[in-house]
Image (cartoon, rainbow, N blue to C red; front, side, top):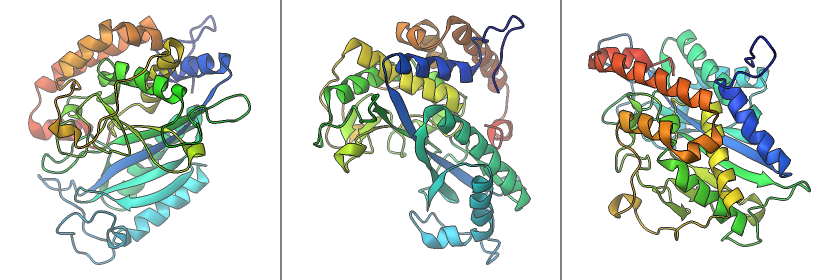
Length: 347
């Protein structure tokens, strides 16, 4: 769905138009981003006063602990996942691998790489599908950034490469280090990480996820094959060289998130910036610039930063800032239980 004014002009506050504007800037340079997403979510029994992992429809038992990469955890909810893959197939959503994650009742499903706009559409529709099917199966599914204080949060990691007019990956130089274009795009992403935090962490609960040592990045840095860094360059075949942007929570708007990520990379390409050296070791243990830890700080940075103004139209910035300040005022009046109810299966 697109939003237009009565005279036919695109409405600048529309997130889908914002992503399209970024993609048109790529097209003007003869470039096409290719994007894949990884979506984490919890299956939750929210019928009582406290959230719990739902009992397995197969055994009737509740899992006593998290089982990372466990086929048994997936098998416990086989009916749900079978329906989910069938539904995704019917909706032309390109689902790939499903895994169990670090949290109790937490799972991740990857969506295949493809054109950026379809990737955003697929992520939005996939979240609707997961939440709706979960309710049909007697429990909730939540993409909320941090439904449990003691378990890891939900992320939406994004992988992207960029093709030229001949279909070549501009990040591929035949080796593991990648091209100058890869490093320019990384520099742009790093520069925008702080100012775009409001997009990556859009709600009050989002900042509970961005804490050290909890499977979410907190430092503004990049690395090769290092999952503690905010920006990661995965290993593998050179022709598949890509950037993984690891900051976004599962509660994001995928159109705004991809506009922010791809727009930041484009500013790096335009300015031919080079990033600082990649880190090695655990990013949590190093003295590095940090992502915003407070919602209000993220709102202020998004409103005034010149890099954000290069990516998003002024009307969208103004509308989003006003909306988030209003949301923050309401959030401050809620109890912990009301805050869970607000976000659990709505974001």
